[in-house]
Every structure is written in structure tokens, then in C-alpha cells.
Length: 318
Image 1 (tube, rainbow, N blue to C red):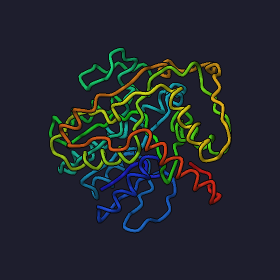
Image 2: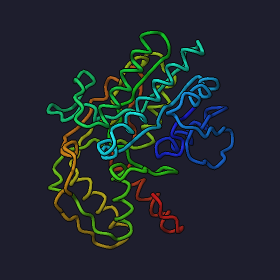
Image 3: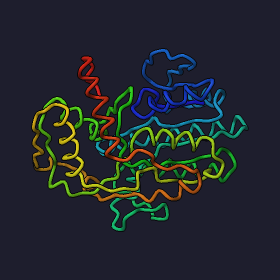
Image 4: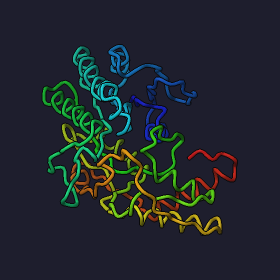
């Protein structure tokens, strides 16, 4: 098995889980990685063909999590976003075709490919209407995998992830990702929380352990091949409600009263920030026998405990 973007937030958690079930894992990253028992390191750039030739020569199942993770970075430099998201899939398909042996490829896509949705919950039958470069490029990558799957070159599966939260051995490098993790750490450090706007927008938060299980199932289940699936909790909550929940639970631990303050949106906020989203996850449940196991209350409790222990031990990185 191979995991690209191995130094990242989600990939780190996936690798930890795969270590318990896989004899050999190839960790692929442009960054230096600490050694891990039972895992090989490939320091390479997924934007190059040589990287994918090496991956395909080793792994039959590829979890592709590398690439740009920021809406704002993609808006600032669309070419870089295109090269980090779409070009790797092009090289992957070429490498698999040259090897003449099909590989399972599980791609980390995003639920924001649907754009600004009106009817909730959102099913996979809803037509994607990206409104950002980031989401457009994710959709391009999905379509490349679908086409290669139909051509019999590989077995592609795309997972459209909602708002992922929860502790990992790494953290998101993008300022517009991992918001729930960051505010939890801030609240535990006694910092009042600032909420952009009125906080009435609805989000679907999915705990990282449930997402990791989704990837592992998608790497094995034959019925999911050639499709894109929502991976979410299927439950909606307003942003203000989740901020208040985190503040209340942090207060129980620290004994310090916290304020959730409404502040104006910063200039240049992308319209995708103002979406309402709740996913219908029955399709993936039916095809893969997967379902979210950790509800939001339990997930926040787990985060509170994890980050509290980090603070006590002197390690404050969420």
C-alpha cells in the first residue's frame, strides 16, 4: 500500500491505522519523514512521472492524499493548484498503463465540489457545480480517475470529504482547514473565540477516525470502484452552535468562562465560506457497509481530552 502526502494531517492518521493491518506501507512525501516501523519512505514529488513509476512498481493500493488543500492558495495561484491536483493523476494513469497491471486508487476529494447547494441533504446524484479553482481541480481529478477506470486501467474511487476534525499526529498546513481543531486548542488555552459573521451557516463535521475507516474500506471493497462517495456524518450543525459547544466543553475542563464573539468577515472571504451543507451518506453505507460511528458530542470530547493532555505535557500542537 502507498499513501501520498504522508506528512499531512489525514495521511498521518491513515498511516497509523494501516500499520495495524498492513505488512508494508510506502509513505510518499516531498518532506523528510521520521522512520516508522514496517514502512518505507519515498521522498518524491507527485507532480513528476518518476514518482508515480516508483509508486506503481511497489503498491497495489494507492491512497492519494497529496496536493493543494487551500481554497485561497488555489485562487491566488491556479496553475500551482492545477499542477498539484490534476497533473499527479495524469502521471498516475500513465504509470499504471505502462505497468499493465491495475491498481486500486482511493482519492481524497472534497464535498465542496457541489458548490453552493440549496437542497439538503446532498446526495451524489446532485450535479457538482464548483465555484472555486480548488473544487474545480478536485472535480477534474475525479473525472480523470473515472475515465481511467472505465478504460480498465485502474480501479478508482473518490471520497468527497466533509469537514474533517479530530486529533492526528500531524496538522493541516492550510489556514482554511482544521478550524475546529484550532478553536478547540484555543479554547483550552483560555482564548476567547472569534466567529466570522453570524455563524448561521450549516456544516457537516466528520471525525477523523471515521474518515480513516472510509479510506480503508474503499481500498478493499470491489463494489465502490468507479464511483464518488460522500464521506460525512450526515448531521448538520451551525457554525455558531459548534463554537459554543467547544467553548462549553473547554470551560468544564479549564474552569474559565469563554466568550464567542461575532466579528466581521475579513476582506476577500470566498463565497464558498457562506455555504450550507449536510451530506447524504447512504450510498457509501450501502456499497461499502460503512457508517460514521462517532457523533459530534463524542468527537469533541475526544478532542478536548487529547489536546488537554498535549497542553499538560507541554506539547501544544493540535
